[in-house]
Length: 316
Image 1 (cartoon, one colour):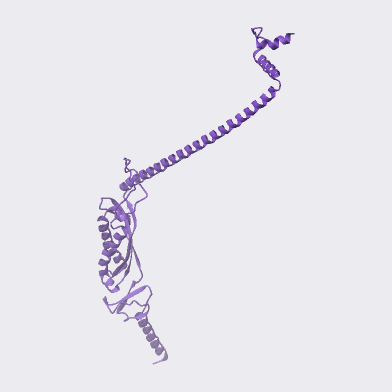
Image 2 (cartoon, rainbow, N blue to C red):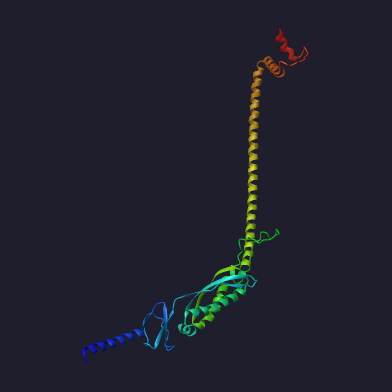
């Protein structure tokens, strides 16, 4: 046997060994878990620890499944509540593969698993939402809301809206998860959590709700406007009262000042005219002449009138 033949044989053996090694070895990532099958039958326990693993080459197959948390998002659907209100409900969930062997035997891949989630979570959600009034799905507590009933009578006009909530949205969600989780266990799936992403009314109900919301907001606005007008009237009344008080006090002070001034002026006049009474009588008579006589005036007086006294003296 020549050297070339030996080299070819060695290379062939090495290549065969490498093919066997690569066929037998497989790597498990931290986010993966593996189920090994032989001719379609599961062999051994599922491999969940990461690292380099080995299997029988060619006849065994490594089936990879995710180990981390996966997403499920439903299609929004129309659901009637117990009080016959139709709403659109949009939900989402998080799940993971808890038993890869059972998962492989029942659903095999993620697409089939998502269909199973659709078939289980959606009916559970519809069953719970339909079994309770709308307020149970919308609210968590029965605390009073900052809005008022739209009522025509004055007795209920300012009564705050209050609803009775027995379970609430969180409890309904918990019941949906409990029902769905039990059914999904037989597929090797663990439902981690489920939430209602969005609630909305259908178009006809939404318009009715919007009209009610507008009416409530308008009523609250009218209440605030009425309170504002009442407060404004109180302020204006107080201002007018204060203004009249200020004017009254000012008028009182002005009259007192004027009275004191007039008294002082009268006293000064009296002191001045008291020095010469005859001159005072003469000055007052001249003022009367000035006011009552003009170039066109005709005056008929008796000769012994006091008013003629100074006229007679003026003619001498």
